[in-house]
View (cartoon, rainbow, N blue to C red):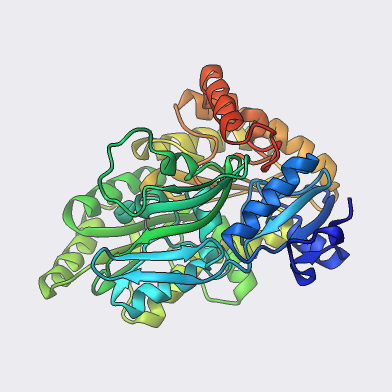
Length: 457
């Protein structure tokens, strides 16, 4: 195929050079061989529509591409597909202060949306470590969560309207920013979390909210894994809890090695918690100190600090947010799982025991959004093992992990999607009837199967 023959785009919207292909043909997964025919850069909704109609006429497969920060292979091209990048659809188009709705193109960076909200004395609460490069469309397509789900929920809660281009080339405007709309099936929510398999998300109406006031950050060293849920419930019941994150001592060791930072505790624990509480009134700060004292009295923690400045609070969050970056040199094989919040310690202990018994020489690093039941497993590749053999062995581990997930009625993917990496294991958390219905829904929106093919199913 010769993409330079496309006449409805400008030549600078078409890239077929090796550097562009190697950059845009993959996401943060590192175990797939890239084979891409080129990259297109639409600059309008109509450009996207023309691309789909052209691809449909020639049976060319298209892959939506955002910030490419995904970890499931959802934006990977490996069969000669054409990448459609949202990089140039990156404008904030409109703002309505009464509705608190901001109309964005799909390529808007999450951090830019957060800063826009801050300038309006408001708040966009979906927050995660890749905020500086992840794009809005991709975060909607994967229903991204992040660190503040405890208080603010997933991306889905903040999407009030979508403009999409389906696999038939139709432009659909879904929900139009309405809060209440009981006029039939909610296609907007169908596209949220669809991983780009139903069509292209090109614009979105996003709801902003009141910014939290006087956030306080605590870093705690629990006495044991079993005490984490006691701490969570206590803070949830007695404070305005915004975030509750867990990471292991192993994870912290890699962060300290990578950053050169000092260990925050003289009394080390197997696990640590960083949590965030809103304290709008002076009495709330007094209450927070009492909660911390209660944790000591009940012997739930062996040590703990409350940040005394914004700089110290950012340092506390660094221990959690720089884990993935610190592990990246070790080519980790990642899993992103969820169970009910109350079952996190039981699940973690059970699975840790299985992995230790079956793979005693492998390094396994845990961290996660414990406050919403989401855990991340990072298996580090041994130096002597090839990439291919490592992936093969890890997929055997997946069978063990997902069987345990099935026993706990959990999910094989909490927030990164199914993509390519989880596709063979979807049946561990979805019934055959559910999978069939999902396939049939895709056929309706994308009958030629040209939009992000070979993903999820």
